[in-house]
Length: 243
Ligand SMILES: Nc1ncnc2c1ncn2[C@@H]1O[C@H](COP(=O)(O)OP(=O)(O)OP(=O)(O)O)[C@@H](O)[C@H]1O
Ligand SMILES: [Mg+2]
Image 1 (cartoon, rainbow, N blue to C red):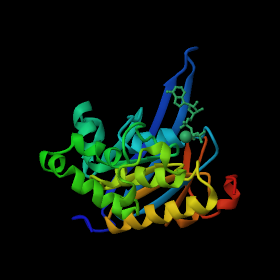
Image 2: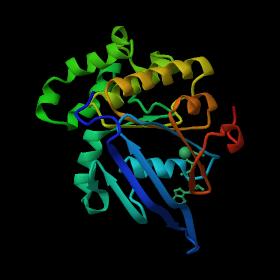
Image 3: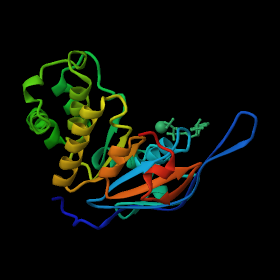
């Protein structure tokens, strides 16, 4: 377990909006008054139709984008007070991302992909990168494929490498955007189980965006995002997501 106990607030969004100005000067209100708390040890799923603002919300949670209004506190720090490089540093040390299309670097081995985040970390992590990378590859059951390039790996294996990369700096928060979207049902379930287990073991919070009912059903807390409005839900069938 990480130093912080389960249940400690990690991310707190209060009345967060994200508005963009379109070329015709119209305003597009992508997120409207989002209140969301993620605590250490939480596993949260957010479901909703295409275009409802899921990735926009995930980018804000991941410190890749900033709210247009409202407040966001990450690990006790008000995010709007952070300068860009402080935000990037906090993102690198505290957040791991898993994407639908894996986003592995082609032409690099699995191990080289996994250690990429350690190139930007502290000196200790940098010098220990291969050892830490191998530990993570072992954790996802792919130590034997460390020297293999992504194009030689199956989709499920590529996503496991991506999970190893997301977790190699021991982030407090793991953000997954449709992590099973490019995988068949069985492989997707195995990948989610792995993500769940590793997140729990390392005391990280996991937020997953998904259309997949099986994935959402695994989470302990579920929300529905509908045209930029977030609400807690237990009725997954009613949210219009595809099974
Ligand atoms: N920078 C931007 N400028 C203009 N429109 C944007 C911008 N970012 C997002 N949008 C629009 O906001 C809406 C929400 O986008 P977002 O990517 O968050 O949706 P999503 O729920 O992740 O959809 P999907 O399930 O298809 O990935 C979309 O209509 C999108 O076109
Ligand atoms: Mg999206």
